[in-house]
Amino acid sequence: MNDIQAEELLLTSTSWDGSLLPEYGSGQPEVEVVKIVVPPSGQVSLHTHPVINAGIILSGELVFQSEDGRKEVHLLEGEAYADVVNQWHKGFNPGHRPTVILIFHAGLKGKPLAIKQS
Image (cartoon, rainbow, N blue to C red; front, side, top):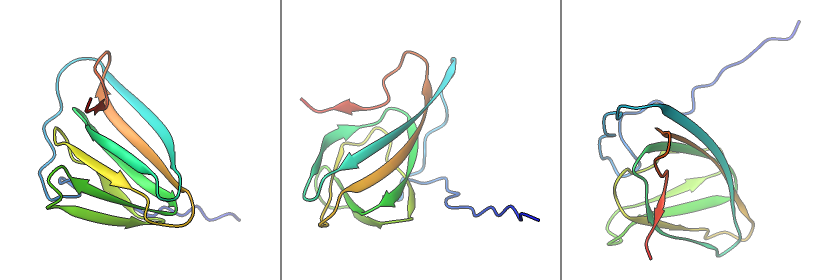
């Protein structure tokens, strides 16, 4: 008999920097799941999310930093996180192998999920 196992990876009301997650907006919900690969020494440019999102590091490692560099989190393979919302932040892969991230966005139809700083 196959035993199904479930392991909760993340249950939180706060993002990786300790900020409370915002209330959901009204409108047609839209969910997006994205796989991102960050090469060794690769950078995730300064960006913000107007919607709630969470991810899991499938392989490698990643460091997220607030825009001013005062807050930081170092995530390793297998770790899940809730990202910051409406706050500029960036990231980088400090490792020697690619980092693969699976990200789940909970947004509203027609609204952006991420905004890059130009």
